[in-house]
Length: 414
Image (cartoon, rainbow, N blue to C red):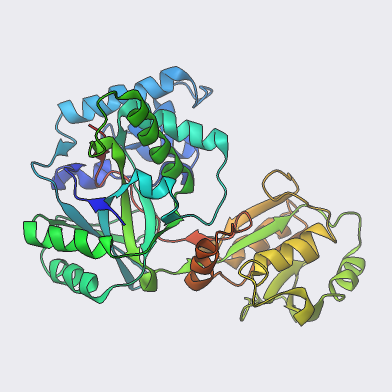
């Protein structure tokens, strides 16, 4: 793998909490407008610049992208974002529920993405790619990082641990989730060279979160190389910003489903059809959480059920066939409920496990949805097995938490 240090563009430490934000894709325009209210330093003015226009403005209007550039320039002119004087790496630590994960902020190599050394496990949508490409292209920068995993390495762990003993450059608890974030600079040349060498020896990096941002950043890099008659291969646009975490520190949480109707079936008819492929046990009104792989929780008409998949419904030797999203998509959503395409069917919605199973109950009890299905989370091993075999996970399979905060560091492409 090829990585490099970079001259990050960052907020001064005394205003980092005003600048930092959630990623652009985890909230809508109205939510961003509310979070940024009264705060001219919020990064939302760059990553969701539609908040500076009337509420009915199309976020894909050319003037919205132009506003991002105007605001990015303004942030730099006012000293709210300042470029570091030398190329360096950064350590970024996140703490959620008492567990801390330590990432290295690096520049990954565009060609490693193009040739498949940076491995993906999800399909991307062209419209989402194009949106992020416009944002990268017009700002000439990766404003937000992508989230990678790498095979855990003891020497890298030791380097990171040494830096994490020092007072951090940034140190804050984000709201409203209450997760803690800390950030250190690695500016020692010998350490920088060693980190670069250790990554060079790795066989692959894995996209955990940010498939569209990765694709967009790489495509802009390829585009810039074609447009430059003097292209050498070492220009800054050949790289894009990523936070890389060791795979053994990451946890994937559950990603659950809620469905509007039972495809014309009564509750009992639906349960009877489930019994063909699952052992169905009524659990009562107390929330039931799936206990292990191939066990599901169903919430229907005020009752929780345990669904245990029968052995013939899954294939533990197949990276895709072993996944509970595959089992539930085929044997419940498709065969019983006639939901064929998870990306486009309006009868289904998805709820990240960070919201808890109480959110599933709430959406069914409100009458908005008819039933909810909770899944046991995918493991990092399953994700890596799928990426290594060139397979693609079904839609809405993985949910990583905590999300990276945006605005701690930015990578300029020139």
